Length: 243
Image (cartoon, rainbow, N blue to C red; front, top):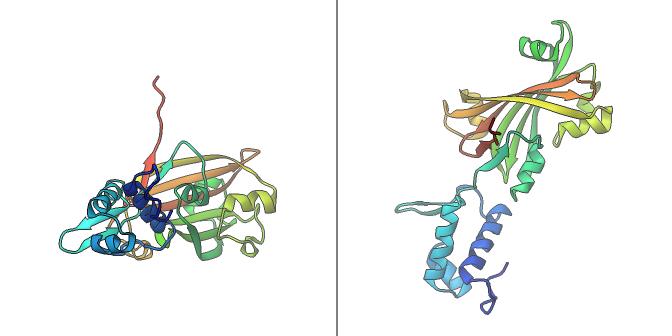
């Protein structure tokens, strides 16, 4: 909201904080951008330096900004929270965080079932699968690289479908197969130089590796995945019940 309501019951620092936060989530300020100085904010909004400093301090505490001594204050997108006990798609997850999701399809190939997919999908070596590689973004920042193996016998002509959004939506709306169950495991892994380049992180960085399997209504596995999540952009959480 514009910082014009000086008579509002909402404190000015909070108005400024929400305006900057909205500008970050809306893409005006991008990851790594240098934020205007306190003097520039003061001149633009005609508010005190104390008010500006409090707003910026709150945004640093909330992990939207980071200060670099001698250089200034820079935009730093907050970590995305993913609850591992909830099956929620990437697009919805990012939208709920107030960010803009984007998916780039890197490749879609038909290949003989490899060992990873055979073990999980119950296929024979000569059977064909689709190998789908996608890079997924939040506010133009690459945060997730996924490699998915999809049964070609259940999803013929998959290459004709729009794969830049929810794959599960394609399963249900195009092929009439609704995913009902998803199993996943999480570990840490060292990324390859190629994956690091795609995710714009240093080579040999540590990332989350999530392996998953998706089942349809008759408990048939339709796909499996190996996805790399940036640890500096994701918090993976779960809630445990006491026994």
